[in-house]
Image 1 (cartoon, rainbow, N blue to C red):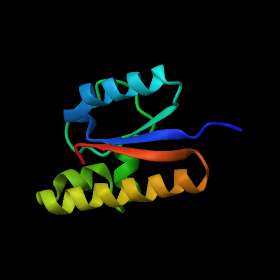
Image 2 (cartoon, rainbow, N blue to C red; image 1 turned 90 degrees about the vertical axis):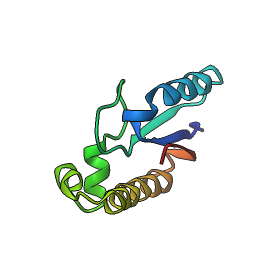
Image 3 (cartoon, rainbow, N blue to C red; image 1 turned 180 degrees about the vertical axis):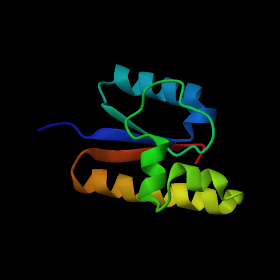
Image 4 (cartoon, rainbow, N blue to C red; image 1 turned 45 degrees about the horizontal axis):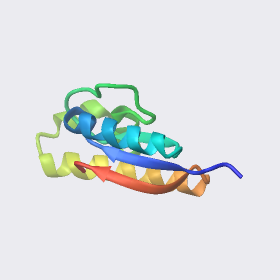
Length: 104
């Protein structure tokens, strides 16, 4: 049986160091990790599994559209919706067994 991964959902532009730490600790325990970026501005400091563009699109808008909303609440709601739908899909596919959220 394949071990399911832990999904880390994070705003990677501001929480990259924290995610890197969690990723390393889980790796020491042999836990596979997937990382979903739910940030809006900035970039991830290291490679991730699901980028912010994919997260925004799953939430119903392009990343450029999210950035142009000029309404932080609506932008966060779009990214949260996208992250939720992606996480649900990964769970239904049997790819993840749990979620850790950082800065979301």
